[in-house]
Amino acid sequence: MTLKIDKKIIGYAVVTDTAEAAPPPAQKSAEIHQLGEPLSRPDKLVGNTYKIKTPVTDHALYITINDVVMNEGTPQEHRRPFEIFINSKNMEHFQWIVALTRVMSAVFRKGGDITFLVEELQSVFDPKGGYFKKGGKYIPSLVAEIGEVLKEHLHEIGMLKRSEHETGQKEFLEAKRQEYVERQASATGQGGTESGFPAGATLCAKCSTQAVIKMDGCLTCLNCGDSKCG
Image 1 (cartoon, rainbow, N blue to C red):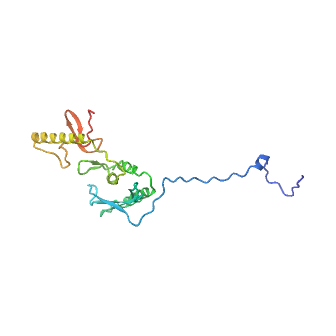
Image 2 (tube, rainbow, N blue to C red):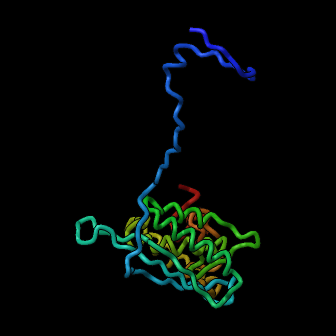
C-alpha cells in the first residue's frame, strides 16, 4: 500500500512487528511497606508518672507514659506505651523535649517492637559530662535518664524482663558488701556512702554504678557481680 506524504518530514522511527504487538510499558507504582498498623487513641488511657531530679536542671522533670490496653478481655491482654509527656518548670530544654516526646509517641503508635528506644536513648552522651544519680549509678546525659525511665516503665508493664541476679549470687554479694563495710569502718572509722556501697568504690564499666571494690585480691562490682577474675 502506497502512502503519500504531503507534509515535511521532521523525524522518523523504525517500527517492527514485535514493537507493534508489545503494549506500552506501564509505570510501576512505588510499594509502601508499613511496619505496623497505626493505633488509634482511645478516650481513656492508663499510665504512670515518674519524677526525676538531676544536677543538670534546676527543677525536677515529670515524665508521664500512657499505655493502651491491647486485646482487652482475652488471654493475650497486655499494655504497651502509646504516648509520653515531659513537664518541668525549667524551660531551658523545652524545645528539644517537645520534639523528642512527639517522635517517641509517634514510634509508640506505629506499633511493633519499641524496646530499641531504651538503648538508643541510653547511648546519648552529654559533651559537658554526665552525673551520678542516687544509688551511685552514672548517667551520661539527661536524654539517657529519660531512657532509664522508659526502661523502668517497660519493666513495669512486662515488655522487658529484668535481668536480676540469681538469689544465691545476690545474697553472696550482700554478705560481701557488709563484710567489706564493717572491715573498712573498723580500720578507718568510715562506713558506706549514701548509695549503700562502700566509700572509695569505683565506677563499674558494666553496670555504670560506683560499686567496684578490691575484694579477695580482685576488683569486683557489688552491684552486678562483674569481676576481673571471672
